[in-house]
Image (cartoon, rainbow, N blue to C red; front, side, top):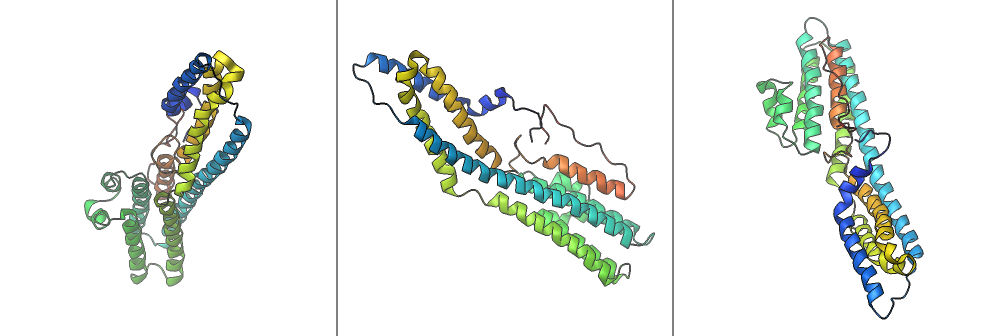
Length: 294
């Protein structure tokens, strides 16, 4: 996630320079052709076209931002649920009998959120899981397609084992299970966003109409701007291409780009809070790198 106060023009241009270069070349061709040909092309109602396109792009960007914001809300719920799980395990399970189980539940939750982060970003999961769990503890979950869900299932079984050992009662077990349900619901929402792209109409038509508008733009401006058409048309095209790119950047909040929801930082926040809850020394919070928080 970009955390700079203002976006950098260099970064914006870097994302749209290829179509922008093609647009500039086309603008030059149209301008030269206009002054060489004996007949002139009719003027185009660019104001009408541009207004309609701006509304279309704005609607698409709002839809993309809603997906990004929902992803952030779900991860906020995940942070809160992780804290609640650690607090419940610490307060309900007795010392010293269940000391190791408390620690196991906390470390499993840290491994869980990091495994989920890797699943959403399509990264390997083994290394981050084995960082917090032993091979024997992690193997059943790593063998499953949905590793994160496997870890969560294992945590539920350990809570049930604590009830059978007499360390917690059924009311306390129900309380902890309700937290696991909140965690599972948040994961399901994230997977829904990741696995369900915007409908094809939202992706194809804005892209097609924007590029068509950029092609028509110099034809409608050349009569007014003359030899300045390549500059004026390219700047106007940059604005529309940048708005189009914003929608592409936000539509997948877990795509492992600089526009992502900062999953690394939020997983580190969970790790810090949960390790502190059991008295371990936590790592330092993640800080932005060149204006980007990962």
